Length: 288
Image (tube, rainbow, N blue to C red):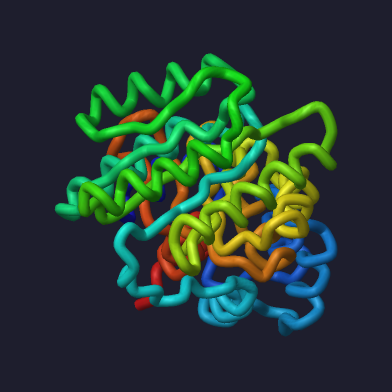
């Protein structure tokens, strides 16, 4: 897992341009490094202001870890456990759903997909192809049909078949943000009618290549339906890997997974400790 994360952060680490690893760094050096990694400036200032003049690895690690919202140890007790996947088109939503389904199957859990992005025919077809490849059932309808009905039918089908997890896709962009908000709120309502307390987890997919500019997008989705956790995709394609710190801190939400490549195995659980260690390995000498 550590190796995969390092692979995913390669562009970020290369961009830090630390010529020689240090035992101690100055506050100014830390400031430059964090800004290079695309940590939001206000957060950088907050970190730097709390540091002593000479900074070692342990001090900086503790300060960075403090900024993360931990993942709650949520036990999957409901059956089906319903996850609603939201995010704008182009963030990697459909591929991430496939990677999640693959992970759950490897954990010996049964999965059903719901093609709730009825706004785009291409999204329905793409998810159908993934369902075929992964050999999991899928509930879908024609473009333009009511996505709430797809969500309802997915949950009811999962219940009837004794399936463990229902992953429901949603549209990422409608004509206006008001339309999108109304549609998502309706889907959430209908999910709870299909099964008490569903959806059990609302997961926002963010494109890692957008860096800090994804924060406003995340705030909008959080205001619409209340997001439970975030998946950051395409981390391997950006030098803005430090934005993960800003995203988690600003939104007070846990990062659940990060996407570090194209392969099915390249969606890994996010571990703040491993992430911070990977960044600090590029700056500081190893602790003796």
